[in-house]
Image 1 (cartoon, rainbow over the protein chains, first blue to last red):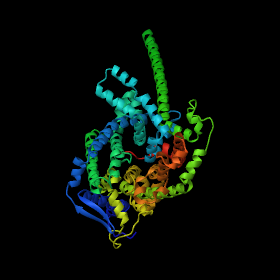
Image 2 (image 1 turned 30 degrees about the vertical axis):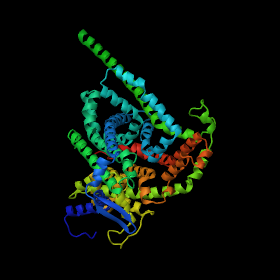
Image 3 (image 1 turned 90 degrees about the vertical axis):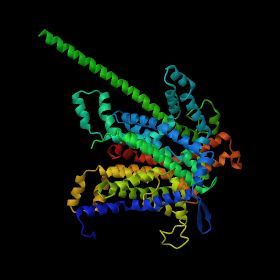
Length: 295
Length: 323
């Protein structure tokens, strides 16, 4: 090719930039600039006029409106974040367990995998919304709630003398079982890939040494899959915080042209973005250190 | 001698007992596993089963308490009505055209970028990878209005004079965001491809280089065929997410009722209010109609999933989703 006479390494890195360039262009034009524009809009008032739009700076007014004037934003924001944080451990444990099971050899394994990944294609905003308005599906949900969240179940747990907080958590998670299963599809996929990547010879050595299955799990499987736990935690957070079914996302979307106008909605999304980033950082810092890498 | 003999008998006995116990526990686990998996699979499939049976159920069966899952007779009337009202053939073709365009472009661009990140060492590579992850963290709603304004008054970075071209209502916003990897969750696709290419053996590439292949030929002829499992996965994701998407449709295409996700919603909305149409049908019949509509919305995805599952389900093992 017509590349100038450069060293091999320099030429390779030039080619690298070439391959990444579509993303870099897109990142700047359709992501970074709009992101800064949003931050700019959040500090100003935006009006659409015939020839384009006008922007008048108003300082931190929009943030003030979002945080202290709007009666719905803060409650919805906190409840969304709390709900998601509660779901994360449940999804992680469930999907890890299912991945371990689906990784074993048994008849019908391909079929079971087929069904467990089905939620990937069935999770759709439109369908979910229609289910909410649909008589048949509502009857279904009530039936499931009766079976799962019923008083008998709570009584059983109370009879076991478990701590109240733990019981509340279990009941809440059980209530959300269908949601947890649905959200687990991609984490199961990621865990399964992680389980497959563990070198076979480690298990062979363990067999020769006469280690039990339980020890094998805690001393080989679990540490080597731990990077996946971090990946999955990040994926679950991102997935639920950016999903169109997320309450706060819907709230911000609906408010774009109403309420305080676009500026306030921009301020809300900046606050929300800051909250997600903070949560992700905490998760990465807390779990990141305990993760084991093979290489 | 007798001591040694006794010892041997005891040892053999222990081994037999241990073998028996381990056999028992293996069996118990197999049973527990089967029950658990069947139960969970049923939970996942249950809504789908209900949707399907109620979409082919005549309305009389709905009021019949003895009918649970299996309708007494089958009817296609709900499908006929949904077919007509959703303008299904036309809307389906529109949706397939848009979804295929977007997903193929996204797969192409994300694979190229993933290859660059996975196989080349250059200054700032980790930074670029970090930026890829950053695009995942930001909800698309956050850049919604700037994107809208961008495409409403598109000026190609100032090259086109004021007030720019209105690209909304065309495929262009989709094409432009897809070829630059800024479509829906494209960061995830880049992430998957990067890890996949990074885990591929160096020897393949070196052999191709020694044979005098250029870098693009190496990529296209050697690395790409090996990446088939990962390509299948990201294509499936891209297709499904675009199919279900209403956000970008709403933002970029003004006549979005020509696409399936909106047609379905409008179809359902006709029955919600006390519109003249809804009074033609008894309340419960509307539910049957809705279910037929949902089945027609999901059917192409289900078919695609079943066609691709052979690659999808068993090829996970070789994908480098590993982080």
